Length: 479
RNA sequence: GUGGUUUUAGCUCAGCUGGUUAGAGCACCUGAUUGUGGUUCAGGGGGUCGUGGGUUCGAGUCCCAUAUUCCACCCCA
Image 1: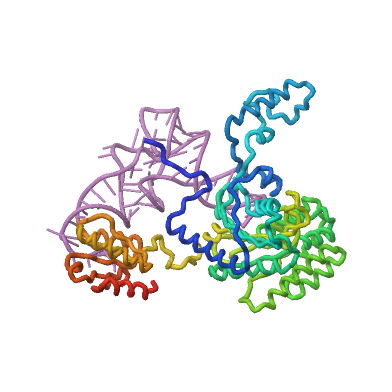
Image 2 (image 1 turned 180 degrees about the vertical axis):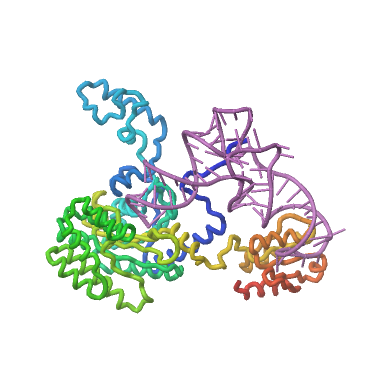
């Protein structure tokens, strides 16, 4: 006997019902993306490692899935090592193996010989690469959306998978805050349509820089960001402890907390006074204020948007607005969406001074939230068949495939039970198991009269009708 | 990457300090009902106890390794 097959850690199969539900989320998002004028693109699952590495910080690099080179990937490595060892004048510090033996290989120094491709880690960096490569064909400002799987070699846990889908919308080639506003409205519209209770948290990297500048110094931005981002999780005390470990004095920490705890109507005025010595901080405040006030004045449905001055986000490339969306009910505490403005992502690939801003929906986490809160419509079923044709013998089968052809022509999803079985109960069992709402029963009498029995499997009622009447009956029936 | 946890029938789980042929509910199959399912009743099939070693007269139960699940940290959708 062969061993039981298994899946790679952190990956999942999806059954028919799960796929229907995932598509329901995807279609909802896509519809909104299109409504706001975004165009679809797709990029390969794999990118060159040179495209991916160094874009997500040190931690990010470790989480990249690397693809083994084809062919004799060890030969090049060995040849290189031998060549370097033969040349006495060469610096051996960074050799894959000082001894020249395979067992002494250093993983870090060897990797470039073994892998030159990797699975994409997100959709933003491949998008930046796409923009640079296609800059002459693209009409700027470019609004694109992209819904594809990404891979991270993280340890799986609740709401965290190694293969998951992101749904991104980005605008590149425009500095206007109108883009930030559009993206926030998209978040609100999608989560409202899905009935997911949500909150969009908004901050600005410039404000964080300003805070750092006022509290201790611009270069402390990362230390501050890293600590205060955990405020929700570890509380005031946790953040204070971490900051004093970084060498912040009690006065500095006190000042920091006074700044980030500004809330309510006066928050912007308060911050403008507190950050008056930081030009960049003031710019950030103005941006936030503009976004919040503009959205508040729109005739849209209410948008659950609030500023959160402790929001930092890890991805290193953000420079302006940063977004994060959380579900406000249920057991999924991690974010279901995130994004922000990046002023120079394409610069790394040789196209400087092009600003972009984007958001991402985490399909798998949205799914988990919706399942947790029972938000999927009952109309989503594994099978979309409306009618199962049941019969007793060969002549009934012949009648059934003909009837099915007519019903399908009328646009009704129809199945014919494929095998002649003695018991019609078995056929009805099949329909029940798949939640097929109607059965058409074809026997000797029905063939003679031309009026098969239409059975409503939900209600348990049945009546003899002509095929034409069956079709109008089903078409008028919404569920 | 660090720490903990889980794994027994298709599914959810029980199995007390190691002791003869490993259990339950649900699901499945057959029949009561050879033209009517979702209710009931009777019967039936199905597990080398995640994998590989070890301790023992004897291991689902104890030890080691490994995989896997879930959870926390780090980080993130």
